[in-house]
Image (cartoon, rainbow, N blue to C red):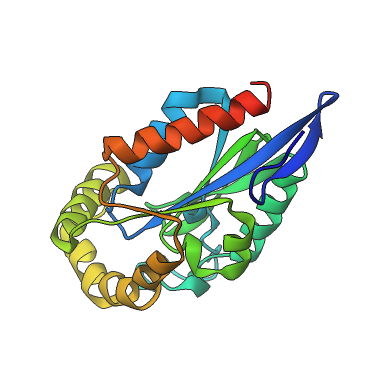
Length: 222
């Protein structure tokens, strides 16, 4: 079977299948999760999803009030070494147990998510493209961007409704770490992307990526 781009062929259940990794990055509240979830909904079990956010470092030794003040938008806050290991394993056709991050506790939980290798691996995260090792494992790099005002409003709604955060903490975190780190570490990765889209709800971009995935699945006999 021919291999497209940098994708990897792995052996599963007696057949050789092509593993293709699509990375979806962008600033907080840009719509990257929306785009990722649309692809997941469209292809179901044919794709596996890995979230870079789940690789925030464990901080059991730090009190809760101090954990709230940690700069979670700096690359060092993430255990990207482990993400690289997991992506490499998936591309070899090996299952992995991904960590799970608890946003309400600002800490990694004791749970894990078992992920089986699939023909399509979606990887999503704010700082996903900031590490060259990750970029080298990704076949299609997508950057989702949005107006800064839209991003902070979406973040406020999400953090209050889904993560149990209070407004004062959200605003303080945004002004002290999220905003400056975005311009320092996130936005520069836009230049490394293969595709830049202006919204997670961009139907034209979605149709293009969806068509590419369909073609890859057909080539893999899915």
